[in-house]
Each structure stands twice: as C-alpha cells, then as structure tokens.
Image (cartoon, rainbow, N blue to C red; front, side, top):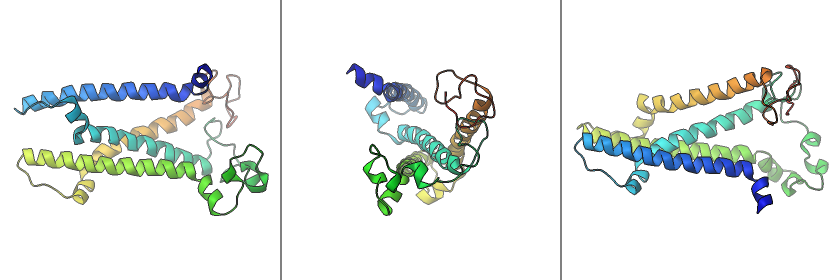
Amino acid sequence: MRRFLRDNSLSLFFLGLFLAAIVGQAIAGHDLFNQEQREHGEAAVSLWDYVTSSSFGNAVMENWQSEYLQFMLFMLATVWFIQRGSPESKEPGKEGTEPDEDQKVGEHATADSPALARFRGWRTALYSNSLLIVMGVVFFGSWFAQSMTGWTEFNAEQAVHGSEKVSWLAYVGSASFWEATLQNWQSEFLAVGSFAVLAIFLRQRGSPESKPVGAAHDSTGVEG
C-alpha cells in the first residue's frame, strides 16, 4: 500500500483536490442558488436537486471543456511549434511527428514497449494518436454537455421573464453562449502560453516542469 501511494501520489493528490473542490463548489453553489430562489419568491431546492440541475452541470462542464481544450491544443502545438529555451518545447530541428526510431515504433520497439507500438498500419496509427483521441472525445463531450445544460438553463430564464424559448442551434450561436465559452478559453490560452515563456527564465527546483536551476536560458526541452 505504501508503495502504491508513493508511485501514484501525483494522481491521488490531484484527485483529492478535485473531489474537495467539486464538493465545495456544490455546497457554495447550492447556497447561492437558494438565495436567488428566495429573492425571486421561489422554493429552495435540496442539495441533490441542485447538483443534478442544469445550473450546476453547466458550471462544471463549462470549465471541463476549456481545460481539456487547453491540454489538447498544447499537446498538438508542441508537435510542430518550438519555443527556444522552454522545457515545454522540443529542441529546434525536432519539429514534427519524429521518425520511427526515435518513437520506438515497429522494428525499433524495445522489449518493454507496448504491444501496439510493435505493429504497422492502423493499429499503431491509432495508438500513436490515442491521447489526442481521448482528450478530444472528453472535450467535445463536455462542450456538448455544456451547450445542453446552458440551453436548458437559458430557456428556464426565458420562461421566468415571459420570453420565447429558443432552439439549441439558436442558443449555441448566441452571444450568451460564446461569451461564457470564450472567457474560459482565453484564460487557458494565456496560462499555457505564459508558462511556456516564463519557464525559459524562471526555475522551480526539483520539478520536471522546470529546467535545472543552473541550466542556460536558451537550453530547450531540458527537465530538472
């Protein structure tokens, strides 16, 4: 058990933070939702009713889709684009998907390589892009869930104000939807881009996301 906790401490740490944060969000959001219900002369709802509502679902999915978009685009961008001096970048001259020898594919696979790296054809091609595929599925799934929960919530507000309901396509094309979506996207892009640049000049000793403290500023892709 001790070895398991050590070997998986990073994922367990963030899992714990995630669970604590989403429970906290549910409790705080439930309290705020009921305050607004009372202000409008409507009945309060239970915590369960709130966490299964479009209001809570939209708030969660809105952030999930932007986070997965961030990592999906960063992963793709670092295949082809270079930032000299950043530990988040490959070295200049190594742009692209790289040769089979460097990627340990086919006859270049080693004894401990995954079985799917040993084949040729569609199986290896699929495995070679499996991370992108899964991240993309989660992104598009959470984006669609955000649009559905946001649409439901939007039409509920329309009904309260005596306005006409709109279709899903009309909502997805509305300023309301894209304002909420883009305010998340812009912050994600800023965070990733600024981190890649700041890591050229700044250090965090012992972190694989940072270069060694004594590494030159123009050394690229060197983790410490």
